Length: 164
Image 1 (cartoon, one colour):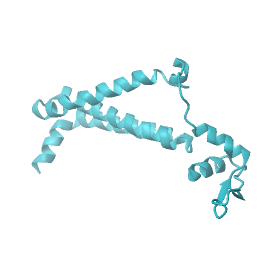
Image 2 (cartoon, rainbow, N blue to C red):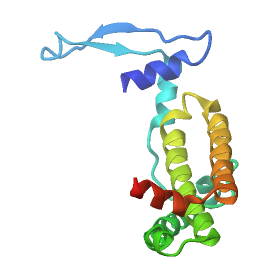
Image 3 (cartoon, rainbow, N blue to C red):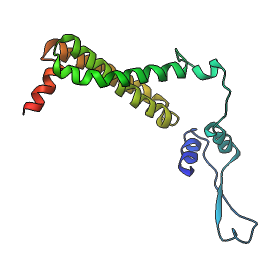
Image 4 (cartoon, one colour):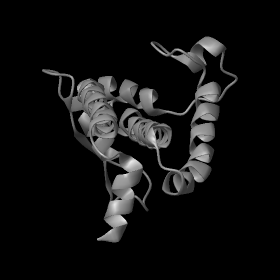
């Protein structure tokens, strides 16, 4: 928690965190020193504090989102469950449709997972991290589609790997 406070306070440019060491008033805690931060940093703690609902649909959507979080979660679960039959099917039934299906499903699963990690843990401190992630994602999906179209395809490549 202290690291989070320091990162939040020091990411404000010229405004920096002010540390003051204070002793506690109780005899048990007299030997311990606590770190108090400036009032500007204390307002940053409110940013991290969990809030209980009920939330309005606008709050669930947030800014820049196209659908509610519950709908997005359901779509993620459908993609995850669809991977169960698609993975064995791509080994049994090879073809362009299976190559594109496995590429799309695995890509979406990985994209949403890493995007969630970035937005939950890193975007608060590095707000521009989503733009390199978008570029990496676009290049990855384009590479998978190019591999399926111009080469042997993902299903055949997996079989070739297993034959080594």
